Length: 144
Image 1 (tube, helix red, strand yellow):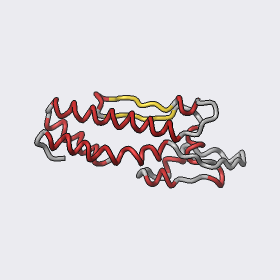
Image 2 (cartoon, rainbow, N blue to C red):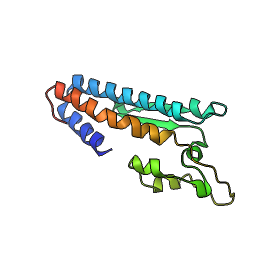
Image 3 (cartoon, one colour):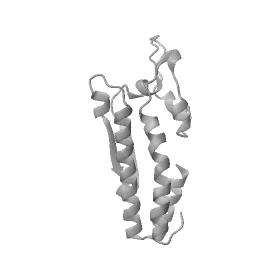
Image 4 (cartoon, rainbow, N blue to C red):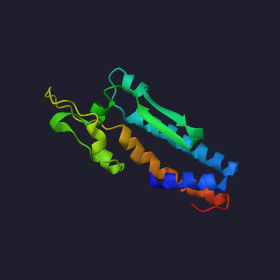
């Protein structure tokens, strides 16, 4: 997200540890909320998919990686064959080429309907983060 990249650059210039701490806290809050929503939205068979949706903090908390570690996650998210649907991916601002890495070799003709859980969670939670970040920054007399 371009807004987050811009914020990261500004935080480095500002060097305000109180502000950085508030931003790190907000990013963590958003990451964990996104994971919680994805787990609620995830299709459940044996619970393996739901149990493998995790957040990981990187680089001092200014970067978070949210992932589903189940090998079949992308097939559940986007579907397969003629049933593939990338609308949630596009809505999140990712190019369709992102899903290409999950495309099979075309050997099997299986059409699994998509059951999006990951990108709908992102689309639901991330827009809430920017206003909260702006509020924290403005509280400390800075501009986003």
